[in-house]
Length: 120
Image (cartoon, rainbow, N blue to C red; front, side, top):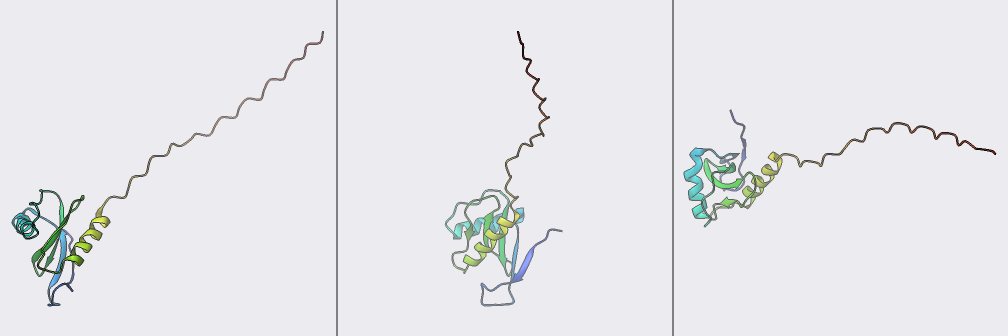
């Protein structure tokens, strides 16, 4: 079972409505298309997306690996998009650090040979 975050929504007048943040599934394609149309945005590409639902209604979506959010312009969605952006940052893999070369300890240098002095 996939984990979803659900919290009471403050973006609507009804405190009984629940906010759900989850990954989009193929069954969301039609709702995402409608949302993009409302937002005057191109239809979303079939990429992993996070969606925000309020009371079971899709209100905002954000591609997981970057790109613009789409949101219902007739509803208060600024906070929803901010939540999606924060959750996307949390899900992103940590930045890779450049590999550091480990230096092996140097072998001790041999002592210099004594200088031979020729007397003659």
